Amino acid sequence: MTHGYMTDPQGIEEKSMQIIAPYLAPMRLTAEQIKVYERIIHATGDPDYARHIVASPAAITAGVEALRKGRDIYTDVHMARVGINAGKMARCGGRLFCQIDSETVRDEAKSLGITRAMVAMRKFGRGMDGQIIAIGNAPTALWEVLSLMEREGLRPALIIGVPVGFVGAAESKEALLARSPVPLITVRGHKGGSTVAAAICNALLNMV
Image 1: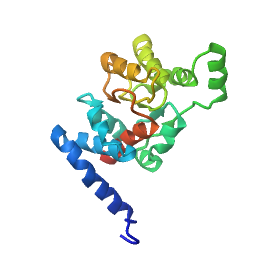
Image 2: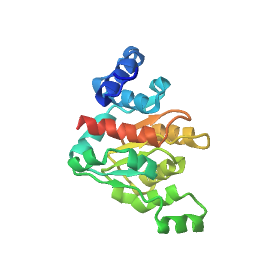
Image 3: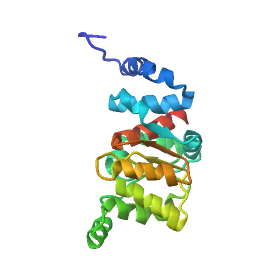
Image 4: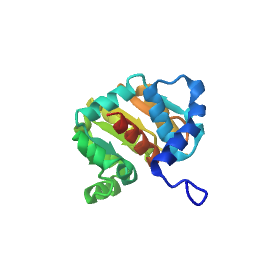
């Protein structure tokens, strides 16, 4: 510590986790769940997240195993993609995909009168089978993934569905909880965001 504040990156992270730990202690989480929960809280600075995170029983194991096998991560927006540790993804043999800014996606979304996030998920389609989907911004992307699972039999290894906002976000996450046939991690209510999606992915990468 110099000048009255901490400057050592490792020390800052360790201190942060010490501060977060008491918020999680009463919840009787597994060691793996703690790693995901604390990474979300650390990324957002908001301990209240602990009350809203929901992970299906097999979710963390499914995500870690997928990454160990070199599976890819598909994101709805670039903010989520760039927040994921690309170096660790590369060491696992996986890739990061996002096509929200594709000219084809933009044109098709305008033509159909739907969001670019929906079109992007449609274009990924069955290519997301066995992979990880991380949605942090667009509820419409999560709705589209649910539709692909029901309409086309899409089966990703894990869905990280944490879109943020006040229009459709909470509803899309409740639909994910009710309808998903595959493991999932979500945050109930209006909370969420690309930062949260990336934090969850990074927590899983840290466990590989």
